[in-house]
Image (cartoon, rainbow, N blue to C red; front, top):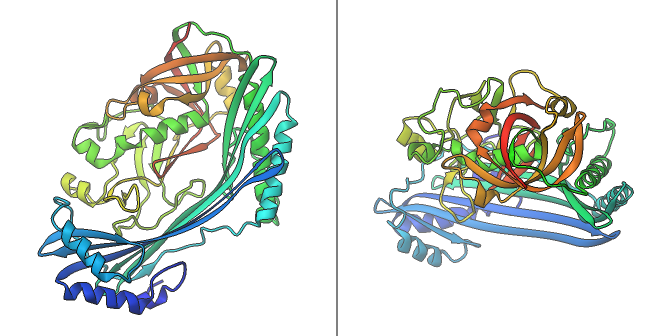
Length: 476
C-alpha cells in the first residue's frame, strides 16, 4: 500500500495537518533533515489464582521522537504531544552535537504501510474461564500442589516514520502469549516448572506433542485448548523435579531441553551483532565462513516466522528486514547489521537497526532467531535413549552473571534428571554446568523436533531439544 500521511488515521497516529504544521515550524527554526517517529503501544494482561481473576490490566502509551540536523549536527527530542513545539525546539537545540557521529536521518523514497493485524480481540471473560480451567487441569495432575502463575499477555506496537516531505513508513509488531508455572510437592520435597505458549502460532511449545485443533475453532477455543495442554505439561514437569539426589562431578552426556537451548540461544544473540564482531567482543570475530558448529546446525533470523513472537517489515531505521542465515551446516555465514555497523564492515544493513527502548539510540537487535537441523531430527525419547547414564537438563539459572557473550563461556546453575532406561529418571539437586557455546555447538550430536521459544531483550529465540556429546558438571 502506498499513499500520503493523510492515509494514516488510526491507532493514535497524529493528524496530518498538525504534523505538517509542526514540521514547518522546525524548518522555520533552522532545522533540516527532520524525521518524526511516532511510537504507540498497548498491552493487556489477565491472570488467575485459586479460580479467581487476580490480574486484569490494560495500558496504552504514545511517544513522539523527533530527529533533525542543526547546522549539520544531529539532534533529538522526545514528547508525548506535538502541541508544545517550542519545548521540542529547545530540546533539539540542547542536544545538537551531543550524539557524536550519529548519522542524520535519510529521506523516505516512497510512502508504505506494512501494518497488519497484531491485536487479538480476545473476549476477557472467555479467556479468564480458559485460564481457570487450565488451573484446574494442572492441579488434577499427580503431585501438583499449587499453580503459581496462569496468565495471558498480549501487546501491540506501532511505529511510523515521517520525513520532512510528509513521506512515511508504517509498521507494527505484537504477540499474544501465555505462561503457566506449577509447583509440585510430595512430603518435604518441592519443585516447580514453567511452560510458555504463543497463541495462534500453530506450534506446540509445552514440550508435548501438539493437540490438533478444529478448522472451525474460534480464537477463544484455540487459546483454551493450548493453555490447558501447557498447564498439564508444566504440572508433569514439576513432578519430575521431586526428591532430588546429588550428582557426582564429571563430564556427562547431556540432553538440553528445548526451553534451555532456546534460553542459551537468546542470551548469545549479541555474538552475531556486526559491531561486536568488528570490535572483537564476540567469539565469532574472525570466523566468517568457518566451521563453528556441528554439520547439521542451522541458525537463521526470520522476521516473518509464524512461530515467533516478533514480526516486523522494517527496522527502526526504515530499512526493510530480511531473512538472514547466520549458521548453515555449522558454518558461520553472516552477521546482523544496522546501517552504522554495515558501513564500517563494508556490507549492507540486514535490517537489524533496532532501539532497545523507545527513547534509546539505534543499536543492533533481532526479531526471531531459530535454531534447527539441516539434517535428520529426532524425538526427545530417541535423544534420551542415546544418552544413557547422562543428564537431562530442564532448567538453568544465573544467565546474566554466568554466561559471557564476549568469550562464549558459561557456568550456570542447572536442574534436571538422570537419564535411566531412555527416559528422565531420578531428579537431581541443583548443580553447575559449564562450557563454551561454540564448543557446545560443535559437540551437538542430535537435534530434536520439539521447538520452544524464549524472549530476551526484545528478541525471540526458538530451539528444539539437543543432545550434546558431553558437558562438565559440578555437583557433589
